[in-house]
Image (cartoon, rainbow, N blue to C red; front, side):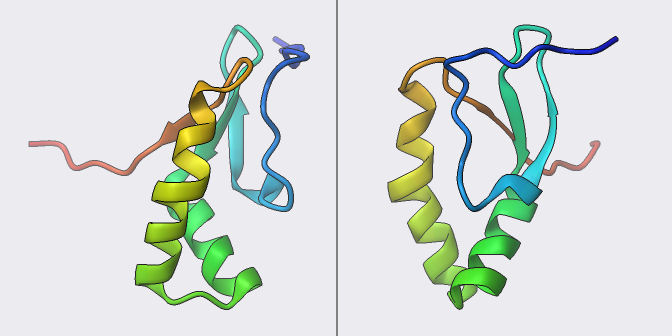
Length: 77
């Protein structure tokens, strides 16, 4: 199945390498760990700075336009 991107989906530039897929509605799915890694590698942030920057600058964008999804790591109980 090929998913067509929702025209209002939010593309986080230059963090496209953190995209891991899309929903059936065409909303982009980003991997949280990849986002944090990219912020550290490409922008020279520490882990703490990258997490804080994500919390204050990326997370609030989820409510804009069609938004996006963030896939967080988890452990099975």
